[in-house]
Length: 406
Image (cartoon, rainbow, N blue to C red; front, side):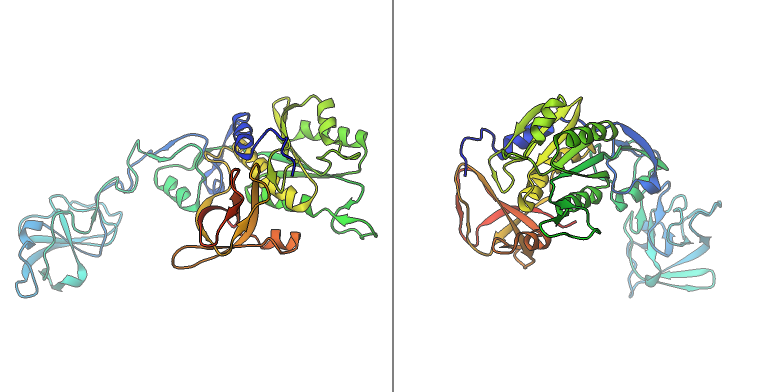
């Protein structure tokens, strides 16, 4: 491997994120907000629940009157009425009395506990209590799910289905989110053709472009796809149009130093500010990043393992920064290595695709290093890095893996 490349993975990652800012915010209906990124901190507009409410079907009581109640020492109370969720009435609990309450019903004035139905027996207008209930038993306090003014979702957080439900409870019907990026993916090469067309000898289908498109769509990004021959004028005109119509451009192929590796030179003619091109990672060393009129361009090599690895380590985090993610990049989890892992050069970061086997002690990482390149990429569930300064991890070592599965 070449050792003259100045930039390592950590610095390239930092430079990528430092040179990008999230896109502008937009307001969407809450029902369309799932998996979007909150553009602002979101605070409760109402208390939820809006009243002290019963967690059980049972009887609202004065806790002091049932403090000694048990199966051997039951307490008998007069029944003053029944209250259901959402009901509006003037029922209250007075000494010697109880009010029947259904789940979700507002706790009547003076009552400070609810005895669950299974610990009581009703006979006409009397109820017999066979267990104690301390103050607060089976009562959901007002604002215990959401309190007015409390921050319930922080800026940069992804809105999961659960978060969307919480926002609904907090009084939201519309929410401010970061606009999803429009991403152009440009595959170059005379040998590449679009899937669905006949495949002549010597040609190959644009699997790289399709894979990158799938990753962008997984994160809710809109995409524009283009296949371009190894023709400088055609590449330049295509890139110029796509820069104008999208928020970011990702190129696939033509990233190295061969006669037909012209993407970086064309971007220079188009006036981009190169931040870096080629870093010390394997696979994926030909990855590049720069800006043209404030819009990012990511250069990716054409070899499938290098193409995807460069995208996952640099381009995807950059696109996630545009989309507003507070912590761009793949999620991680600790794993244990099933076998030894060996790198090739201590000056480089070696990145290894693998599968994750769930075990009681935590996931076991199995390297896919000997699989064919496309099969390894298709089967991979995680990536483990042998960082700069190391060339070897023995089996059973605990390391951190990037997780590829949703």
